[in-house]
Length: 137
Image (cartoon, rainbow, N blue to C red):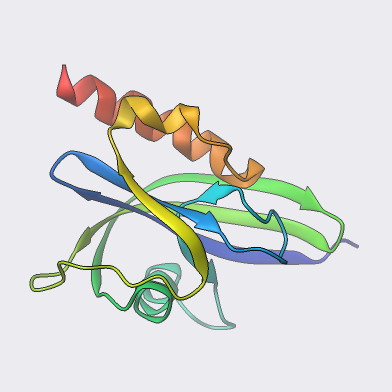
């Protein structure tokens, strides 16, 4: 049986732009773009895990909102089950500090498709681009 790894990703939206993070060198999917987040610990609610991961990775508090998408992607080490959520920076959090990522960008929804995304993130990227892109028109 393939190992299932539950992970969560934050689609942080601010002023109509979406935060995108580039994975650092040396790890799985190095150099590809993702919505930041991480593993859900045993017994932890996904929303709690996501808030914890964003604090650890970016040094900021977020408010976790609606679920966007859940996707499964096969890797050599197991099946990644990624659930993404819309998030907003909590009051007073104006700067995000990169601790695990090589780069980051704030992009308009229409620009999201142009990045080289980690495969597990692609369905959420398509949905976010369509949902938020339609709101801007």
